[in-house]
Image 1 (cartoon, rainbow, N blue to C red):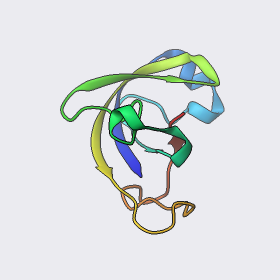
Image 2 (image 1 turned 90 degrees about the horizontal axis):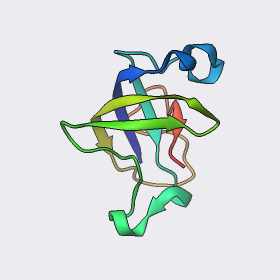
Image 3 (image 1 turned 90 degrees about the vertical axis):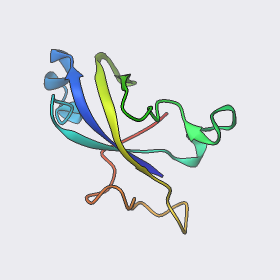
Image 4 (image 1 turned 135 degrees about the vertical axis):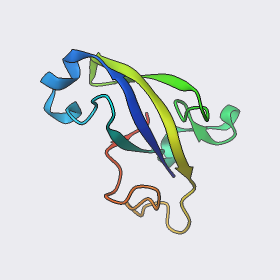
Length: 99
């Protein structure tokens, strides 16, 4: 499934990283929760899925100096093939993945 977030804060270091330049205040980003990242203890959701109406922190794994806060806008379970790259919530497809 995918989750759409609005970025509330992003460290300046994110702007210097080409892969994370979309992580800017006010931007909407879509994050995919793949099967390998599902956590049974979280009700088969990804860690970092977020809480409705509450800002949560994030960190880019490959660039830990790129971090910030975002708020979940929409989360939608994917139906059909789990290998399908499309997520109904994300019109252009996912920007990032949970790990």
